[in-house]
Image (cartoon, helix red, strand yellow):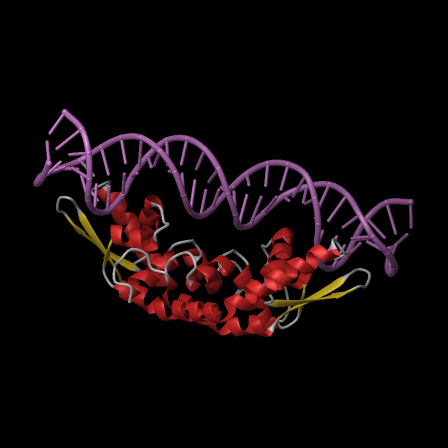
Length: 132
Length: 132
DNA sequence: CAACTTACTAACCTTTTAGTAACGATCGTA
DNA sequence: TACGATCGTTACTAAAAGGTTAGTAAGTTG
């Protein structure tokens, strides 16, 4: 139970939460996993259009890193013009339910959070700066 | 089911996954929630020591934002020297099981991911650059 | 009186992340 | 000849995230 005696290996830099965050804490990875989980196979340009505001570069980079980690399977068809299809691997699919739970939590609670934040800001403004 | 017809509101910039990521995608928020869920009430310096490699500034900033959103409750004791205790709110606690699921997924699969990544890098080096 | 304490703020700087714009390869079409 | 389609790459730039250092309050300890 790690009673307050210095550092804690479950919180230190190798703990699993941090590993997951390092991997998926970027702007696009989880979004692409979610999208592929809904749509199955998609082409590069289909992903780009569906997301709408991702740059070509970031889509390339993110897909490549997901492929590199075995979360996404990339199939290249050497036609002219070239065609590439992306889909989730089994590993990628195994992550989906957890993402959806987080998403559901967000749908339930995000309004409250944003209200809290607004109220906090107002309170701060009224008070100016109080000691601590 | 959003059949490939332009953009998708569940993936666009207001979808719940992105909101959750915007809130918790930073380096420390989830870690602190996890820690408080284990330890209950903690003082500023206890959190700092347990995590080990967080700067004072980032701890202040992250705790303040968690407080602002109503995820963490901050209790200030006007003693000399000052004492402050932090604990999860009910809202904060409601997030914990989801984090733990993600963490468990990480523990199960992160080794595979890192292996995949290593193999991918090696493959890339051997091939040099092939067309696509 | 100097040093130390806790929690925090402010100024500054470095690192990381993401975006933009331009270009390439290749063939079919106008 | 030039353009468009597809899936990229590269170099450059802007913005954000996060780290470092110094300083504050007000009392306690040596």
